[in-house]
Length: 80
Image 1 (cartoon, helix red, strand yellow):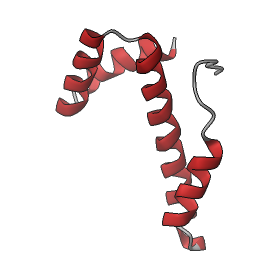
Image 2 (image 1 turned 30 degrees about the vertical axis):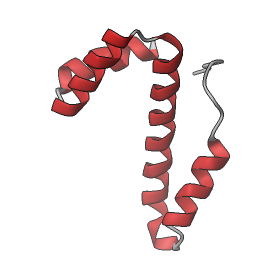
Image 3 (image 1 turned 180 degrees about the vertical axis):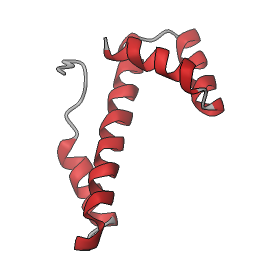
Image 4 (image 1 turned 90 degrees about the vertical axis):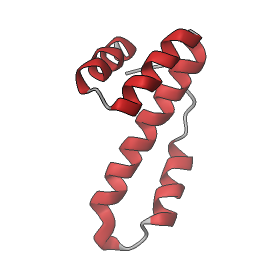
């Protein structure tokens, strides 16, 4: 998925993950953490570029309550 408004933070994510989980046995943790970092970065950039204050408030409330159905609706709208 291409998002021209999104920052390319691959190097930052890589070095941050390697600095925290440097031992070889943490390979799967590094992969998971890198994916989380990229999704969080994309979500942040999307909210900065397109979301209104009210939409950000609703998304924040959904994340805090971790309402999976509501969160899925917002994230699906974000990806599409």
